[in-house]
Image: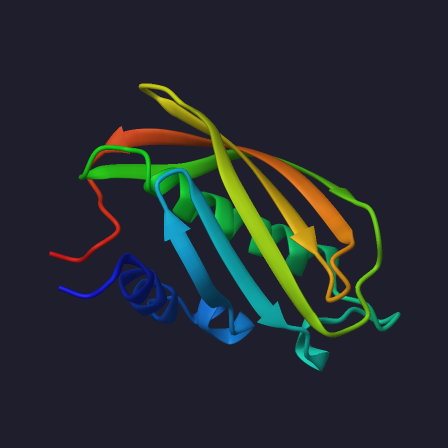
Length: 141
């Protein structure tokens, strides 16, 4: 069996959306995940900076994997709330998303995700809640 990071990379490639964004999985540990991506023209909105929806999707994807790392095998999660503050525009370079689980309960997982620009300045901060139910796991069976 491969690493958790390899399993996450494979699952992200199964989705056309996440495969298209070209997200890199840096690390996945119990209660945390770190993803990164190189900003490309396809990520930018009309004013030449990364679209807020792309940053929100990166936060959602990174936080979801962090959440998955804390729930029992066979649990399915779905985003039920995402609140994001955009702090700095991102014009280019490599961005990094760092997600942490704040609390895993029986039915919900609460996480936070910070996105940093290439200079290490926080560009966005998100708080996310995931509903959790039995029936799914990160690895395919």
